[in-house]
Image (cartoon, rainbow, N blue to C red; front, side, top):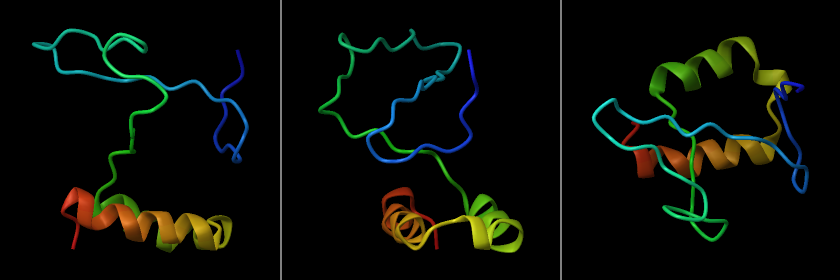
Length: 76
């Protein structure tokens, strides 16, 4: 298995959905499917690290996505 650090639209990736110890594991097809919205959990700190260390590697459409995620996740 190869670890993919970055994917492009249309490319396949594997995603691990983590859960709290008191929750049951979520299964694709049973608890969610390809029609559900799944978003990355980001923080103000992770955005700042992207800006400081990876600004040139993040495409403009990815910055736009981060900007759209901020209000959904309550990030100032």
